[in-house]
Length: 258
Image (cartoon, one colour):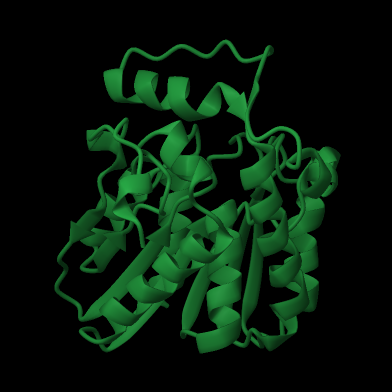
């Protein structure tokens, strides 16, 4: 690896820092954030789980939460490798390790589960399909464009960290990185039949990014004998950090404590 190729623009952002909370019940929980997201999206859920005795780890996926230049140097193999390494780290220390992921994190959770079959997993708005149909064209678009300014994006944030992340990530579309996400989506769909873990699938009717079709497809195609599907009515795509985050957290805690 040539370290000289790494961007010097990388900024240390508190919202992007990995989260590790030691618990008391001997069970580890790996939480995986989504595409262009950061550990900040899982912080509320992590703290709720930790109060119930779980040890919680939220890694930062490579290229996420640092800079747009760093993001462009990462790919699907990097993201999956971080998840697998994190699972190994927890498995070496705790008697059980459960896994939950949001959006692309849900996709990574499904792929990991198809290999290792942890006892319990949760797919939160798992993006094995997306409402953005152009994602199928990204292998071709990415040959010409890596980064595209979003003209329709006008979100504002008071928090300085979120301002920075908005400027670096959310203000753009990423054909190259979306191509890698699309690869993960196709891998996950093919490997659902290998999943035997107890699985909880969460989705929302108000999700404008991942259609309800995705949740039903996961439910109908995993080999798990113990599986549940719950659909929320009000929350947006980032279910762990939106209007129904309390109920989302309570549902996951109840699943893990059964």
